[in-house]
Amino acid sequence: MANPFPIPLNALRAIEIVARRGALAPAAEELGVTPGAVSQHLRRAEERLGIELFERTAQGLKPTAALRQVMPQLTAGFNALADGIAGLKGGDEHVLTLTVGSVFASRWLIWRIAKFNHLHPDIEVRLVVTGTMIDLAHSDIDVGIRFGRGSWPGVRSELVGGSRYSPVVAPPLARRLRTPADLRHLPLIRDTASMLPWEPWFAAAGIAPIPLGGPRYDDPTLAFDAAISEQGALMAVDLMSADAVSDGRLVRPFDIHVDSDVGYWLIVAEGRRMPRKVQLFRDWLRAEVPDSAAGYVDQARRGHGGGKVARSPG
Image (tube, rainbow, N blue to C red; front, side, top):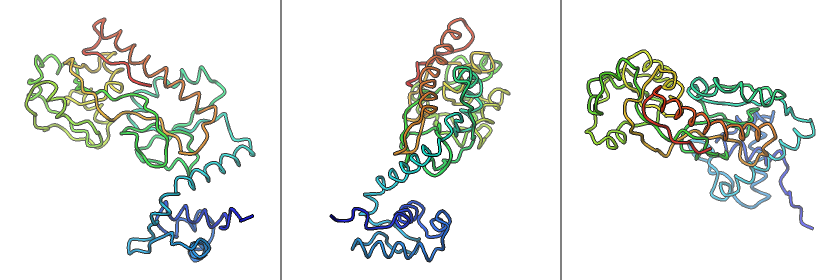
């Protein structure tokens, strides 16, 4: 019977790491060997398989089409092995490590995570707040929440919500707005880290585009604070501005919203099993996100805010 594993496991790991990171040194660091040893792993694997796995270019090692085709299986296989080893060690099912961006953490999650803690007191939630896309397959992060289109490589993604957006302003500024065109008399805050353009909202409101001449922030959390402190109008995800609107710190001056192809996504490493703690957190999000939007609608109808929020998909 032919050997189904003609390439040693360390060589397969070297191939997967080099293909993912594009250089010998990172693979050498992960494997605890020299770059020369990694290079030998690659050369011997190519000899045994009878094909080239990498193109040697001035920009580094690039996986060939044949290797790119099987990379998802290789990565998933090593994730499955890691899960198996974690199972043998009796992995920590009582600590959930979650990576999130600053806006989701500060404007939504931090005000609600106590509900999850109350429902599941046996699970400790550890937050890693960063705008960097962490490689979930090669870290101790269990799950992430990220804003975008959900098409990141190496992860499975499930839409949480937050695809609808509209302008918000502080109440004193809202009193100066009678029609959407009146926004041209206010500074329009520029959130350079956001993926929310103003132009679709101008089109939905039936007005000509207004120049963005207001203050500029690279941190979305600071952009929210700028809007609350009356520095101008901010284009914001309805889900993220709902609390500030419901408690009166911000107002949606117009009942005009834009539905976009971006939103907040729950992400887990592709090919990795979803442990109980992640399943529980996912189920809680599915219930909590629509509930938080519905709660805002109720308060808005009682006169505590402008506009309305659609129930976000979970």
